[in-house]
Length: 456
Image: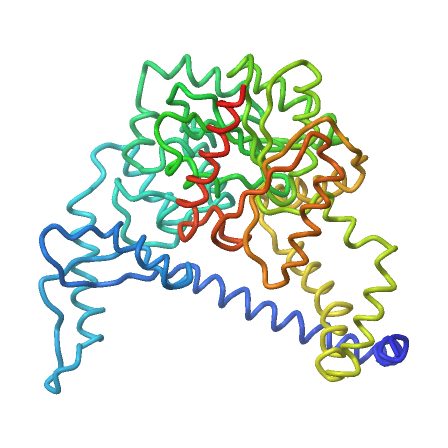
């Protein structure tokens, strides 16, 4: 049956395939333009409220009730809403009059005060696609992410600013960032120190407790740990580890073992001896296991926290699983033939074309991140998983299929010979570190770290 579906695809003539490819490319182009247009917009909410109104508190409340994309990037308090003769809110007047007043007030309330702030405002406006940005706006709260941060750094450096990824991560408003750039002191000394770190990124260095080291996900992404540091508290230093900085030529590790060695070298420079806490999430479980193994072998106390992730999850797609997938495919074809055929065409023709198209249109920043990600998948797949004399704390979210969590637990029991402690947490795997769930995630992780420290 599977061959029949594939035969239908194969029977497409060269002309038909060319037309299909052209159509896909056209659709992707339209989608890209649409996405770019949508990316330049942001959701703004207007409210009437008392004088002690807290916009951030309202955002936190909304995050428990609506998806992330429905949470406004800015909530503006207004004296009253303009209304139509029938009593309904005049949305046109609100958007044309009130929004203009709000944008003007934002700029007037927090305008740039020096040349560096003015240049940074222009850079943020270009990168984020926003017309009204104040110097106290938080980069990551108004739409910034890891890819856009690289663009900010590149544009700032082209203007002669000595700006590092670490600095944008630690100082997330224009006012704070400009103060660092303008400073004559620090920062000459601190900047030299930061430059020497190729992998370690400081999120929060304040606090007397043993720090938490957050391992990158997929070769480069670590900015989602930003909110985690915020909710862990001021007494817990937090660092992130990235596969490679995005400045200049990127370094591609040849193995998980090589990456672990580089990470440990930089970790030791900021925190020479344990106890060490690490959190692994998604693509970085192998590096978490390897670092833990190496440090334990050198008699250091290490606590590895796994955030709702299967051990060696790429094994789920090995050839040994082909029979099970073929049976599932046949069953799907019987129940939903049209939907299944469309899915196959999408996976075999549309998806590859989409990836090729995206690869062509990627800017330099995205290409670097993709290169790091692809290399990380490669070395992850080559990592030799084996039982280790380690223990882990496994954060698990509730799944629709309860058997899946049992498989997750067993996968780690096969790796961690010294035991697996299961910690049931709220939220969903994809939003553990998002505003919606990060506060409870941070509280659960803090308990895990405190329990580990108390056991020493």
